[in-house]
Length: 284
View 1: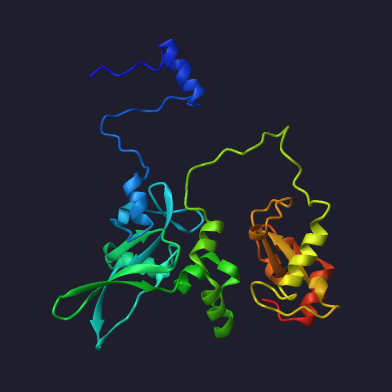
View 2 (view 1 turned 45 degrees about the vertical axis):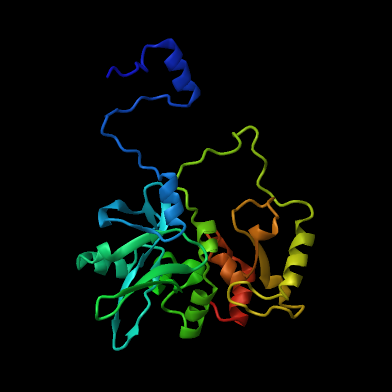
């Protein structure tokens, strides 16, 4: 079969440039695009997909990828021991648990998925090798939360604080912070037309209304800052970093400590306000 010449044919060259393909890559008839099919997308969002270890990518941010999607990973097949089935945890990062499983060549027992309601398809295998399938609600792996420092999770926290982070964790919020799609997106604006990333004139009013609806408590650690002299320590954080995006789903009421743990917010810990906060409250 004769392949089209994208280097000399004027029409094809114009089409190539219009598509933004300024440089040509190598072509092979054996090439398989690293993109999910419609069927795979549906399976990821439902029962998940069995994959080999080498097909799962450890992403730069520590999370897990399969083809062009960020995924969750879990054990689907569980056996009964001592008369009961012990449900597994699901993983959102390449944590110590997965590393140990890889070393023991047991990674093939895992399934990748993107389902967001917290339930996963589990195959329960009894001693007679009979298999029954059910949808079970699983908890997130604490090693994963520690790997990502998700919501400030650390093994140095008290057991109560660690359990609170686990209980608050939702897959939908995880995918808000770590989007499923791994496609590189171009900015919506160029340097000359991009709006200035600054607060809207009515942000203070919006922030006050939000904090009031939250009863002046931190969305993360639930610290009560309702006393009039303590309200200054409750901030409103823009999840996506766009200060003009005041949609309710993009806003969080965070105490100064939790706010300072957000990406590129460490400078808050050097302020006089934070020093005053740390004198009044426990800071980690």
